[in-house]
Every structure is written in C-alpha cells, then in structure tokens.
Image: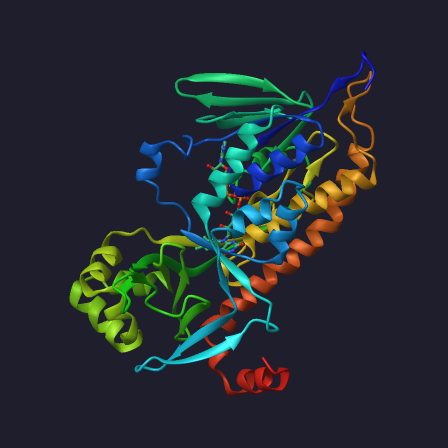
Length: 405
Ligand code: FAD
C-alpha cells in the first residue's frame, strides 16, 4: 500500500456467530473492523450466569466447519475440541420407546453437537486478539445513511455515530440493517412463521458403574421422538447433559397448562424420557422455560451498491429442522470472501474513496448466494416433515435399507 492509500473499514452489526466470524475474515483480509453488538459482552461472569438464548447447543456440519477451517486460524480444530460427534439419529418409537439408529452417512461421516455460547465466546476471544478489530458492546443500531457510510447507534441514553466504507448487517432474523436496506433497494422479501413453538428441557447426567457422570442416552446420536404434529429431540453436551427441545403447535403448549396435563402428555408420548429428565425438573422447566417462535425468511438482493449488505440470519432465517442456519451463515462468509478474492478486492481505498472490485463482487455474491440460501430454507422446511413423520414411514425405512445406511 502506498503512503497516500488508506485502509478500508467495515462496520459489522451483530457479534453473534456470523458477525464474529465475519469480523475475523475481514480482519485477515487487512480491513479495519468495527464490530457492534446490541447485548452486553456475553463473556462477563454476570452475563454468563443469566444466559438463556436461542438454543443451547447446535449441530455443526461440514458446511460450517469448512468456513471455520478456511479462516486460516485452525478455528475448526478449536471448536471440535469440545464437540460431541453425532454419527446417526436415534428414533424413539412408540410408547415403550423402542430405539432405531439411522446413520447420517458413511462410517466416518458425522455432524457435531457444539455449545452455542462457547462457540460465540471463542470467536469473540479470537476477534479481541486481532489488532484491527474493535468490538463495541451495548450498541443498538438505530439507523444508517448507507450512501454516506454512516451508522447511528443508541448507547445507553446517548446516540453515537460511526463511519464505515462498508456496512454489513449480521444482526439476525429481525435485522434492522435489512429494514434499512429495504428503504434503499427493491428488495423481494417473504417471511413465514410456522405454527410450531419450541421449549428446551435439560436431561442431566446419570452415574455410571464407577460412580462418574455419564450420558443418559447414547451420546453419538441425535435423539428424536417423532410424533407427527409434534416431536422431542435431544442433543448431547460435553458436560454429559442432553438439551432436549420440544417442538409443538402453540395451541398444544397453551392447552397443556397444568402439572397433571404435562405428565399425562409425556407418559402418553415420551414415556422413556421421563425418568431420564426427572419428573420434578420436567415440570419446573416446562412451566418456566420460554417458548420460541420459528420464522423462515427469504429475500434478495442482499446488498446496496458497494455500501451495505446483509449476511447470516439477517439474509435468510430458516426453521431449525435441517440444522443448517448457522452452518449456512458460516458458509455465506466463506463464499463472500472467495468472491472478494475472485475480484481481487484488497484492503486499500483509492483516491475516490472506493475499494476496487467491491461492487462487482457484491453484485455476484448477492445473485449466486441468494439462490443457494433459498434452496436451504426450503430443505429446512421439508425436514420439519421428515423429522416429525417421515423417519418412521415404511417407505422411508425401505429407502434407507436400499441406501445401506
Ligand atoms: P444471530 O445469532 O441472531 O445473531 C445476531 C446478533 O446481532 C445478536 O448477537 C444480536 O444481539 C445482534 N443484534 C440484533 N439486532 C441488533 C442491533 N439493532 N444492533 C446491534 N446488534 C444487534 N443452526 C445450525 O446450523 N445448526 C443447528 O443445530 C441449529 N439449531 C437451532 C435450533 C433452534 C431452536 C434455533 C432457533 C436455531 C437453530 N439454528 C441452528 C440456527 C442458528 O441459531 C442461526 O442460524 C444462527 O444463530 C444465525 O447466526 P447470526 O449471527 O446470523 O444471527
């Protein structure tokens, strides 16, 4: 870079999983990065103690791992250190809970159960260590002036304004950056809530023969109790607990509103899970844990000139049944940076304040990536049906036998 050239800077809104990883990628590209997050720093002890987010654990697949690997910082290895491999799903059939294992792929193929908070914290720790990233917590994006590269945040009772050459919205499904982008471009936008809510429950460890904590179920499986219009799933955590998620229509949650109704319902449909979760814990968590809504969002294009773009859930929220929301967001980052490479986008601002190749790269990324993201949103919706029902149908089982998995 010559002495007259300046370094480009990117403002990333949202330090969730996608925003934090994208900050690392831009920093490695040589850009100056400002990463803004609405919430308090999740690593602070007082915040950790009260954490209750979207889902406690997540399935990390090759799609996401590849993006972690390609960061060039061995992030895949770091995250896999505390992951539990899931080689198959275990379907719990009928009242007696007969278990049937269905492999996800060939012998050595598996997905990984990871702790959402740990993953986010590790990414923030790495971002903190890079000199060209500054993280601002408790900054709530209020509005932007995309042509001027201006972002206005509410910070406590104040308003603060920041400048950037590129604004990237990684601010999740209810993205304010997307709302601002919609005022600038003719964005096609569709959203759909499904009539299913989710509630998380904890399955604690059991004591093994040696008196040590052990998993209550086979840890190398994603466990499913498919019951057609509702289902229970369970993913293992490194601390030997399972996080169970009950997916069910809102009206059923509303109707099952007393301890006796909860127990009748679980005895009827998930009887084998009761001793594993424990009756007291089940009743306490069912009544106090939040019910989350599930939304699917498709939109395009994802950008405004070379000024602003959206990524991750801000661009394509999907229902969680394919376990690909975060994975797809991580892949967005890899594809984005491959496209920037293809157009030789460096970190230098030219005399007219532009980054050479950036507009072309964003035009291409937006078109190509939106096609893939829409397809994954559709697959996620289809997998809702597959997990709740199809995994027990005779046709499905026959196909699995033919595939030899
Ligand atoms: P988010 O995680 O939503 O992060 C957005 C960030 O932006 C947040 O930190 C938020 O505080 C911040 N923010 C929002 N507004 C502002 C603002 N105005 N100013 C500043 N900051 C702001 N995906 C998988 O790949 N595998 C799974 O197994 C899986 N399981 C799931 C289970 C459930 C029940 C759910 C609901 C989702 C699941 N997902 C899964 C999807 C995954 O959670 C999301 O795709 C992922 O969290 C998206 O990351 P993100 O960084 O784009 O958005």
